[in-house]
Image 1 (tube, rainbow, N blue to C red):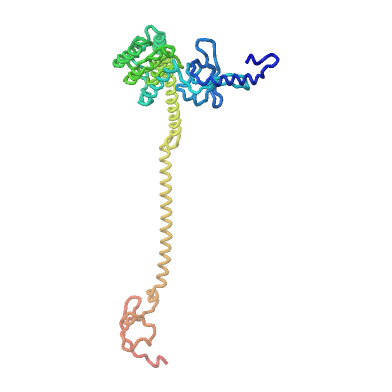
Image 2 (spheres, one colour):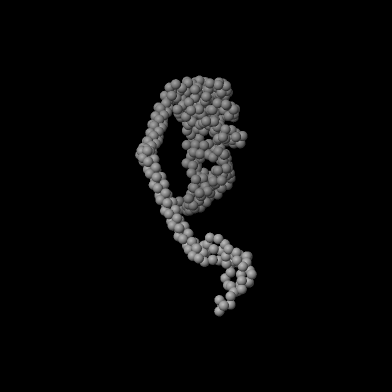
Length: 407
């Protein structure tokens, strides 16, 4: 190109950039390794900077979101990765970047992949299920502690536990907490403490460290040993951001060794305060109940029936006597009226009675059949008739009427 250009006949910048883009495009795809920085996502594209781990060299990389999300575990800032990239040159902006076609974690990333596969396997077996986790005792008699030799984690657990409950007892098993012997020693200490019937809870504690330092606490053998323990196990590994598989299988996870002491041992001051509050609450409840019952009793005693029960009986007796007198008067009045009615009715009956008529000198003539004779023509001569008087009866025979008398 330099032989064909001069100050008098330069090439346009667009031509030069197009030529550069063509050269870069002919490079094809390539696998590159580096450390991710400046990771960000906008829409369906992930933007990052791939930095050389040794030299101060970096390049911009874009990746489709699907390529990034398909990487397990997903890379973050600081992750080392191997990328299958295609170099691209944007002529309009004169900028260069790689487009990632595939992404694979390396180093720590490979360990994370293995741990993720182990986590999925153990989760499928139910070792992380919440229903198999046991509650910690309120106040453990003896606490088993698995920790490093003369470690800060041991000091944090012991000091904070005794500060909260001075009478707490510990059985400490000091083991290697990193390196090739860590898994075997921690597992053996767990089994030893679990076999001791005086141990109520076991705490596995270790301070913070790198991912490689904490790998023993994600070992399958150790995880299965914790799952097989009959004694509740508390995991206190590293710091809040650290999450080994031991945290998932343990009955309780503590973010730090200090937090483990707070979860396992109750605070004597807090418990005394709680007891005092509950006692005061109980007194208030009982006092309120007694006050209500006394008020009710006073109200009941003030009622007339209880204040002067004899007066109530006397009042009832007066009512009974008044009702009795009223009943007597009513019955007497009814009898008097009935007697008057009977007298009037008797007088009427006497006035209308045939006997009264007979007493005035009248007589009743009857046929032998008992029928009353009303007309003389109804009687045949020679017929026996009965004449009823006021005091007796007479029997007579009818004769022919005297014509002279009839005339």
